[in-house]
Image (cartoon, rainbow, N blue to C red; front, side, top):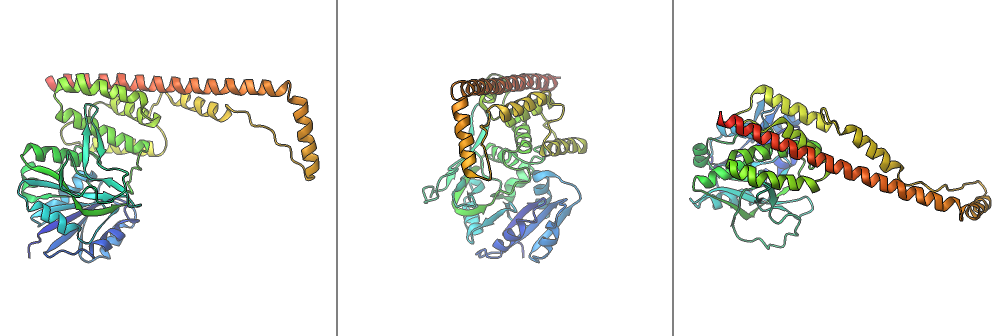
Length: 400
């Protein structure tokens, strides 16, 4: 029997989470046929072994990591459902999740539907996303709020959360699937939603379709590796969808202003992204995919390739460690002796040594703050210059 909907799960080293996800699917209440397809992106852990323990799940093993978009495309290629649902391996759907998803897709004006995504503590993680313009940052609706049913109605959004979303097969075929240029992750679902709207379809969130998302991202939320892939694909999204005048006169100055206050890891990684230039808007070659993964692995290991700010970072770290002089605490096996030595030291140093130490500490702190400010200004300026160069080079190549 042809399934009404196909659930596709992309797995990459997901052994710690995917078992709970598949067990949650066993408790779905759904009054029609559905299938579960797990596309494994060349995991090196026990993910595939765990999946084979769930006979209802079809495993599609891959011999290389195609990224999230590439794996979804390969999963949909073997799916038989009239609709497609995507579920992260670290997400656990409520029993009626699939029923609510399919009910929303019955509206022929709706092409993409997202879920109410809850964090592990039950707070709202996402009810879709909104796009901040002109800086092109995605912001989750309702993030961090307690879930008291305040978002009770289906709402149109800019994009849905890729951890738990669905779309019609007809729309998928019309759009040609996910753009695999958003490698290996981030912004691919936003790009799909953008194309869906331009095709005349609504992009909505169905708050009654709930999942608990434990957010076990392989890149580590807000790690240097996360910032690298997020900003790399964010720059690609901006170049793909903004006209040149908006890109140069609105996005560029907004991004330069953001860099002034961004966390230092964000700022340093953004500079690395911009130095590499705008990612190609076509499909990446095997060499380009390998280079992106290698850079991510280097960042995970704690290094920025050819980073001229590394000596300054070490200097700031040493200054931070040594900025405050630690007070000597006298110790003795005889408590009375320790108290007498401490009292004698207080009398001897109160009028001369202590003021000098305090003055030195204040100087150390001022020097440390000055070094930190210098690093912030230098990295922000370097990232802004790199962005200018990247956009101008992209514009030149685009007009040739």
